[in-house]
Image 1 (cartoon, chains in turn yellow, cyan):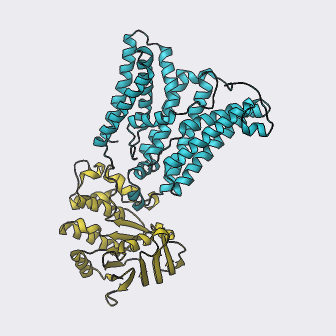
Image 2 (cartoon, helix red, strand yellow):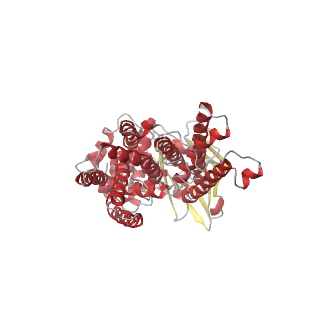
Image 3 (tube, helix red, strand yellow):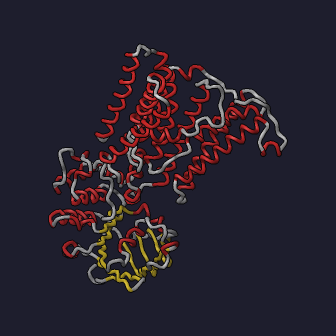
Amino acid sequence: MSAELVSFSAVSLRYRGVRAGSWHLDVPDFRVSPGEIHLLAGDNMSGKSTFLRFLAGMETDILATGEIRRFGAPVVTGADLADLSVMLSSEDIMFPELSVEENVTLGVDRPDLTPDWPESARKLFTDAGVFGDKGLKSPLTTLSSGGMSIVKFCRALVSRRPLVLMDEVSSFLDPERARLVLAAAIEFARSGRAFVIVSHNARDREYLVEKFPTKSYHISRHQDRSVLTRLDSGNA
Amino acid sequence: MPSTIASRRWLLGGAVIAAAAVTAADRSLSFELIQGWMANALSLGLLALAAAVVISAGRIDISSGAAMSTVGMLIVATPAFATPGLGATLSGHALAALYIGLLYLLYHVATKAGVPSIIATLAGLLICKGVSTIIQTCLLGVGQICRDFGTHYGSASMLPQTIADFLDTFAFNLPLAALVIGALAYWRYRTRSGLEHVAVGMDEKAARFARIDIHKVRGIAFSIAALLIFVATLLRLHGQNNGGWAPNTGWGEELLAIAIAVIGGTRVSGGYFDPLAVGLSALAVYVWRDIIINDLGVPTDATSILFGLLLLGISWSDLRSFGAR
C-alpha cells in the first residue's frame, strides 16, 4: 500500500450535467502524504472550494480524467474518497439548534471517534474560551461565528480520519484563536495527520509557512479553465 | 430537548386534562368514553407520527390516508379472491404489508432521484385511490377492468371486517401507545440515527458536510412511516366496527395527520420531531373535536374552521419560537 493518502497525476476535473462547461480544473501533480500540510490559494471562482469538496468525495457532478489514487489504489469516482477525510468549510453553518456536543459528533462517524473525546474537545474549548455555562451541552446558536469555527475544528480533533480539509475555517477567528487552531493543526500534522488548507488570509498563511514545512499551491483561472500550480518546490 | 418542545408537551397534556375536566363537569366522563377516545385517537396518532417522521426529515407525505384505505382493502378483499380461511387472511395481510412497503420504497427512490416528495406522494395518493376503487368494483362485479376479464365475485356493498374486540380496549391501546411513542422517543433522542434524522431535516447542506448519508436517513423515515400506517390500518380495520371497510376509508386523513403533527411541534420545514408531543396532539385534537361537535353541538363545518384557524395560529407561533430556517 502506498504511503500517499491521495495522489493526482495529469488530472482534469470538470462538471457534467447542467453545469457542464462552467468550470474546468487541471491538476498536473498533487500528492498528499501523512504528516503534510498543503496550503491552497487562488483567484476567486478558480475552484478551490470545489476542488476541496471533490477531495472530500462530496462532488458527484464532477467528471475526472487522468489518474487519481488513494493509498496507491485507483479511484473510480470522487465518492471513493469520501471516508478518507474530515471536511471543515466556511460554507458549512452546521446545526445551530443542536448542542455543541451533537454538532461535533455528527461530523464524525462513531468508529472514527478518538478515545480521548470529549476531554480533548473540552480542553480546546477551554483554551479558546468559547464556552457558556452549559459546556458541551450549550446550543451552538449561543456561540459567535468564531466559537462555531472552533467547534467545527473540533470535528477534526476528535476524528481518526487521516486527512483534514479546511476551507477558510480560521478566517473568522481573531489572531489569538486563529493561532490556537493552526498550532493544533501543526501538532496533528506532526502526529501523522495530513491537511489541505484553503486560505486567503495572509496572517494564517504566513503563520503556517513559518512554523511548518508547508507545501503551497495556487489555483489560477483564465476564462473557464483553472490550473493548480505548486509554488514552492523547495520548501518541503 | 429544546424548551419549546417541553412546553408544547405541557400545553398539549393540559389540553387533554382540560377536555377531561369539561366532560367530567358535564357528568358524561366514564371509563368507556376514555377508552373510546384512546382507541380512536391511537390510529389517528399513528398516522400523525408517520407524517411527523417524514416531515422532520425534510419531506412530506400526503398519501397516508389513501395508503391506509388500500392496505385495508387488500386485507379484506384477498379472502374473496381465494379460498377463505386462515391462509387467505394471512396472505391478505402479507400482501398489504408488501404493498405499503413497495409504495414507500417507490417514494424513497423517486425523491432520491429528485422528484419533490409532494409530487411523489401525490402520485401515490392517486395510485392508492385507483387501486382501492378497482378492488371494490371487482368485488361488486362492476367496473370496466373486471367486466373485461369476466370476473364476478359477489354483490356486497361493504367488505366485511374481522373484528377483534380487544383492540379497542384500554388494556391493549395504552401499552401499544406507550411502546410506539417510547420506541420512537428512544430512537430520536438516544440514537445517532435519530440525531442524523433531525439534522437532515434542519439543514441538508450542513448534513452533507457532516457526511451524513442523507438518502439512508430518508429511507429509514419512509420505512418507519410505512410501518406506522400499516399498524394504524390494522387497528382501524380490526378494532373498530364501523360498518365495513370501504374504498374511501381514510381518504383525507393525511391532511388531518399533518395538522396534528404540526400542532405536536413538528416543524414543517423539518428538523423538529417529538413523538410524545405528537401523540398528545392526536389525543387532544380528537378529544376536543369530539367535545366541540358532540357535546357542545357545534356544526362540523364550523369546527373545521376553528381547527384551521388554530393550526394557522400555532404555525405562526412556531415560526417565532422554532425559526423558519
